[in-house]
Image 1 (cartoon, protein in one colour):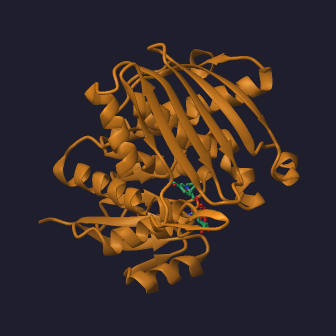
Image 2: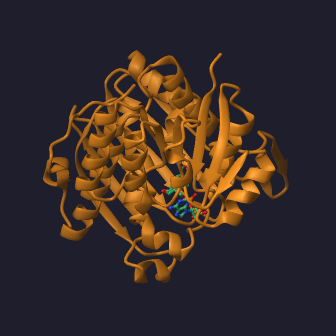
Length: 347
Ligand SMILES: NC(=O)c1ccc[n+]([C@@H]2O[C@H](COP(=O)([O-])OP(=O)(O)OC[C@H]3O[C@@H](n4cnc5c(N)ncnc54)[C@H](O)[C@@H]3O)[C@@H](O)[C@H]2O)c1
C-alpha cells in the first residue's frame, strides 16, 4: 500500500504528540521531516523518533515532491499563513485549532484550501475520544429522545505559560473552542446564541494579559435545546472533562478517566485515583484516532472527519462568547458571523 509522506511543523507540546503517533503508530505513514524555529526542538524529536530531516524553516520542505501532507502544530498566529502556503504547494493539511482568530483570515485560508482541492482537517481531537463518540452516537440513535440540555465541564489542571496565553486568543478561542466544537458535535445541531459570564479568579497575571480564567457560557441551539459550558484554567485535582446530554427519553453522561478504576475504603472514607492529569494522557487515544482519520481521508480520497467549516464555526462561537462578556448580554452568532454561517455539523 502507498504510504502518506508527512512533515510536522512545530515540535512543541502538541507537535511531539502528533509526531510520535505519525512515526510509531500509523503504519500507512512515513514521517519524513519535522521543523521548528528552535532547531534543537526539531532535532531532539527527529533523534527520538528517527525522522530523517530536522529543519528550522518549513519552507525548506514545503515544495518538495517527497512530501504529500503537512501537520501544522506551530503557534496559533502562524496557522493561516502556513495553510495558504501549503495549499499553494498542493499539500494536504492537518492544522491544530484554531485556524486563526480573525474571520477574514480564516475565510482566506479556507478559500486557498478549496482552490487547491487539498484535504483539510482541524485538530478537534475530542470528537475521537471513544466515550464522547459513544455519547454523540447515543444522541443520533434517538435513544435519548429529543435532546433538551447539554452540560460540558472542561477545566485544566494548571494555566499555560503567560507567553502562550498572550498569543493564544484567550480562553474562549484557545480552550473553550474545544467545548464549542463538542457542543456542536454532541447534538449535531448549530448554536444560535451564547451568553457569557467570566472573570479572573485563578491568576491575576492572566487578567493583566487581558484574558479571563474562569467562565460559564450558556448556549441556545437552533433546535431549541440549551447547553452550559463551565471552564477553569486550574482544577487542583487534575484535568476535569465531563459531558452530559439530557433528553426526553433519557440521558448520557461521560465522567472523568482515571489511571485505575480501584476504589479504596478506610476509616476516613472512600479514595479513588485523581483524573488523568492533562490532555496528553486523557486524549492519547483520541489524538491517534484523529490522525488515523486524516491519513485515511487522504489515502482513500474521502472527506476529512473534521472540516474547515467546523473550524470556522467554533471560532464564531468563541468570538460571540467574547462579545457577550464585553456587552454583558446574549449574543447571536449571526451578530459576529460576517460572511454568514453554513450551518452543517459533521457527524
Ligand atoms: N488539540 C489540542 O488538544 C491542542 C493541545 C495543545 C495545543 N494545541 C494547539 O497547537 C498549537 C501549538 O500549541 P503547543 O501547546 O504545542 O505550543 P508550544 O509552544 O508547546 O509549541 C509550539 C512550537 O512551535 C514552534 N514554532 C513557532 N513558530 C514556528 C514556525 N514558524 N515554524 C515551525 N515551528 C514554529 C515553537 O518554537 C514551539 O516549539 C496551538 O495553536 C494550540 O492552540 C492544540
